[in-house]
Amino acid sequence: MTNADDMPGSPRPEVQRRSTLSRRVTTLFVGLLILAFCLPAFLFLTGLQTNTDQISRSERRVLQGLPSFEGDARAYTAQMDDYLEDRFGLRMLLIRLARKVRDNLGENPPNVIYGQDGWLYLGALKYRDEFEGQGSWSNERVERWVESLSNVNAALSARDIPFIAFIAIDKARAYPEFLPEDWQEGTRRFRSFVYQHPDAAQTGLIDAERYVMQAKAAGKKTFYSRDTHWTADGTYDLAMAIMDRFDPDGSLPRYMPAPAQVRESERLLDLDAMAGFERSNEPPALMIGFPQGGPDGLTRLEPTAPDSPHVGQFATVRSDGTHDVGDKRLVIVGDSFADSMLGHFLPSYADIIRIHHGAHLFDVSLDEVLAYEPDAVLFATAERQAAQKDQPFQPIRP
Image: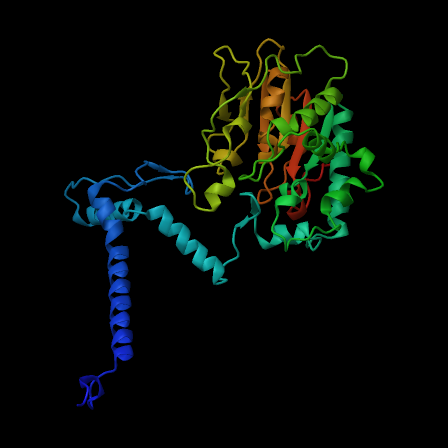
């Protein structure tokens, strides 16, 4: 008797199994695809989405609120489009996923490199080139830096105004042990060439790297693991060395009037933000708030030129210091690495002026510095910014 499975035209059992498995896989794939399309809308409609903040800290902007119809249909629909784009479910997850896909496809180099043990580093090609000794700067730029700092130091010394400068060490050099394994540190460094110049003694330079690495050797975490900047704890020794040079015989309350207080961070660390995160996982013990010297116990920050085209961190900013130290004033020409140290100087000055020195801004002039009638001047910039900038100050006019 002939078996039905052996009859012509009847599929064999293994073929049937493969066909059944194929249909199940196809059904599962289609189901997951439908779920992927529907889940963001479901989370949005039910209010279960996680991105309910009014401000996106990683994008540094206010999210669009639900618009109200006021008679202009075109404006209403445009605002509604913005609202839906800002509020759909899993928004930040999908943005990070799209960014990761673009980075892996080579459409643009990643801004953030994931190192070991959760550490993040700047990933732009120019920063890696500088770290590995392939920076595009020339010896002529080193000469301009040394000449510029020397001229400013001499001009301020003639007015009995102490001047100190430093080029900060970058995070990749301070913590190379957490870098990806394919990053190899080079010896051709812009910072080293400036510090080793025969005329470096005339520049007012202080070796920031020495004090930061000294703090690291003492067990302090000198850089945030998910931010490009150094910690206040890691720069305390450097700040005290600077104050010793500014006022070696004075009786100013240069050392902290009370122990540094640990607090929760109220800001998103920059590498977290660049990687698309809305919250930082940095341990709060590293966020150090210094006792403030104002009459209300707070520090006041205000732009000195509200109409400046450079807003926010790129404006010239005045910070209240301690009011019972006379009218001493410190002027800092620096970038965000200088901002991280402000707390160390607040007990010693009535106010501090910070003139931003970003690599993308024009050179600062000595006239601008002198206009604030400083009692001391500090120039401070990141190693990566210095390597990109032509010179630190505009040439002094004859």
